[in-house]
Every structure is written in C-alpha cells, then in structure tokens.
Image (cartoon, rainbow, N blue to C red):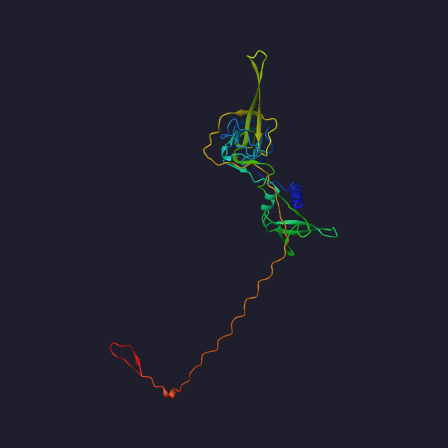
Length: 321
C-alpha cells in the first residue's frame, strides 16, 4: 500500500496546484516578516530532570509581524505557517482597522489520511496498471470507505478494493477540499470600510516546547576563582520551524487554568490494508418444515334430528335443551 499512498498524495498536490482560487475576500499571508519566540519550561519538570524529547510539555509565546492587503468589506485572513500546537483562544491580532470577528485554527492539514477521509463519497480517478500487459487504464470511481482498512471504491463494474490481489492502483484527486491546508493555518475574519495595506502583529501561545541549561565550572589555579560557562538547549516537537527568530527563555510558568494536555503535532500517514482470505463455508440449509397436520374429522348430524329451543330463567344464564 505504500506506493498507493505516496503516489496519491503526490498526484493530489500536483493537481491541486492548478485548482481555482477560493474566491474573493480571502487573503493569505504565506509567512511572517519577522518572528520572536519566548520558550517557557515544562511546568511539572524538575530542573534536575532532562527533557523528554518525545513528550515536551512546555510552551512558547510566538509574536509575528505580517504585512497584508485587506479589501473593503468582510474578509478572511489566513496566516500560514503558524505553530501546529497553537491555542486559538490565545491568539491576539492587532493592527486591523475594525479588529477580529472570529478566530479558527485550521489544524486539519493536507496529508494522505486527511485527503482520503475528506473525499469519502466523492468522485476520484482510479488509475490502474493492468497485470501482465502493463497497460494503464483510468476510470471514474467513488470512495466508499474510511482511511482505516482497505480502500473500497465503487466503479462502473461495482464495488472493489484498490491495490489488492496483485493490482497496482493509484488514486488521483482533482482538487483538495478547501478547508485542508498544507501548513498549520490560523484564520481570522475581519471587516474594513476601505481597502488598505496594513502591518499586523500576531501573538499566540503554543504547546510542545521546552528548554534547559547546562553549566561547566572551571577552577582557576589560585583555587579561589573560577570560570563559569553555560549554554541553553531549546527543544520543539512542533512541525513548524522558526528560522532567524529572536529567542528568549523564561523560567516562570504559564498561568493556564485548564489541565488538558495537548497532543504532540505529528503528520498523519495513510495505511490501507488489503487482506485476501477464503470465504467461510455457507451455513447448512434450514431443516425442512414439518408436514401439515390432517384436519380433525367433522361429525355430521342430520338437521332434522336437532331441535333447539331457549327460555329465560331468573338468576340463570340461557339454557339449551
């Protein structure tokens, strides 16, 4: 399945590059003009304990400067390349004429898994290399399964499993869903009376960082003085890098009231499985129904010999004689 996954994502990226724009009123800021990062230590880690690089629990305060051109009226500004561990509720944007109406973190990134999941029930192109001849055939298909398990597709011939039973298949996407981004993106909605070019300041808190210091003391020959050397190690588990960023470390703790731990930002891979197995034997046929019962004999009596009369008796029911 690995070849299907790699080629599917590559085909999607190539085909999505020629997709039409999302419409007016959408502004994308691809990268900040400048950025500064202040890293806070993990609040529950002792200073004598080394950082766990697989589970960083510190924070970073990121401040960016971005220049954007906003149109008149309502608009959505997309800040691409923010930290994947960004807390949207902490984001502060200054410099907009009328402020911010709404903030959203587009955390569902463009990946083989998310792309396949979002295209459920939608048409795609199935490119199949025919076994033996090596010929290639393309046909329209519809995804009928989720990203866990086998890739079940519906074609003109019916339902089938892609890349199974010796087949070599590729899935081609005409375009990616509009809400999928190749990089972590913060979207804000704003409104301006006139079109203008503005310089914005974006500050936010992100999770998945940490820092620690190491010291080396070298005693001088006099035994009374020493030289002290120190260095700081910064760590980040975030998928976003901050090149040429102004950096600071803070020994204090971030005052956060919630106790939920974030998830380490990682890419999502797609693992489609194809398992061929023989069908189980059919169940035994049900037992034959029992033969119908013969009707009970009916005694026939001559109507001439039957005389029925009735009379009402006080305190009793009707009697027959």
